[in-house]
Length: 121
Image 1 (cartoon, rainbow, N blue to C red):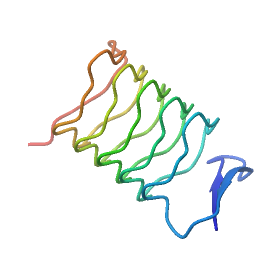
Image 2: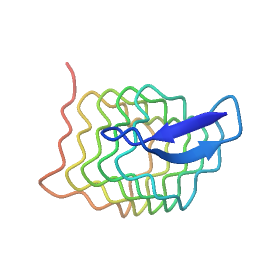
Image 3: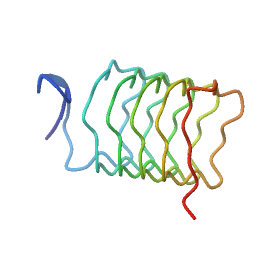
């Protein structure tokens, strides 16, 4: 069993009855402020989830479904976004420094000047 906790308060936001979050169905959940740093969320369904203010740094989000998810102000530093589906996602103020968005579909995603993405040399 995996407990997804708030990154500041430690309160349990959601419990997953599995050994891994890879391929998990987390669609439509309120996971605001969660600590998912370093998690393997590859192939997971996070569509429509509210992940605003969450720490997803160094997480594996490859091939994940993030359609219409709210990632406003989230930390995706060094995360693996290869092949992720971010269509119509909100990335306002998200920190994507060092993230790997190769082959990610970001069509329709809300990306404005607050969005920080710095390609590493």
